[in-house]
Length: 365
Ligand code: 1BN
Ligand code: ZN
Image (tube, rainbow, N blue to C red):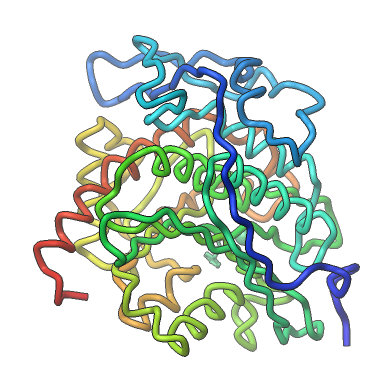
């Protein structure tokens, strides 16, 4: 039996109760709507030091350096300052980019690795700093390389209603022995966006409860197309939720994956639920991002499939048109804060539409 290098030393299920609130005043950034005449230009540069200071919880040391100059942080047209207490209600790509950079700094993060355990602690610390309650769901996955300890993270932001809308990502990176694979887009980008979406949604009053899902083991250990060697964490989540009777309360899943590409191009996925895809793409069009949310369709196998099979309306927001996919080049040079901003803005715009759709058709799944 092969295990991750130190997986057996890692902790099992643990619940974190969180009360820490951010106190530093920050300025929110919003991506330029590039389909519109008022398009703005990207301002390359690191996140502000005040932003970095605000995002560091006591559990995680401050970053050793600021983001590289190509991070593509977006300049806001008018600074939109704090809207509620000291917490911004807008998606802040400076924060998100920093979450991405910190994950990449842990190095390759395959299931069962020490680096993935570090990334997990980082995610938990950031959720805690935002005041979001999270739990770890550990399990042993039977892979072609033997049993591997994996851990899903499940965080909950209570809404007016108990029914849930999930925002999901995988946080593992694919194991490559031949080269160093750090997954700046494939793993880090969507994880960064979900952390930042959680911060914003925690500061809002939401109609539905929002669940943040960070899946382990999305990547194949050997071969995606053989022996069910993929999506270990999402399959486990659905199995467990079916057994405990909690899946019926999950009304929609929005999966983010590979959204960091500097040249963002997201196609509709024929495996995703049409009405949910329509809502996301309508938000993309409304915000002026038709050049990033394309009308062409493709077919994608990813962490949403176990949910689709179980009858949960699901959409995969993924840019697979990425030359660096599963190569050593999927690093900081190939991603931008602006791409994170675009997807973050679209998801935040879409959530109330999803809530309205679900509230109007409670029996439809
Ligand atoms: C996404 C990122 N995926 C793996 N890393 C899922 C996938 C697998 C997408 C095979 C297309 C083909
Ligand atoms: Zn991958």
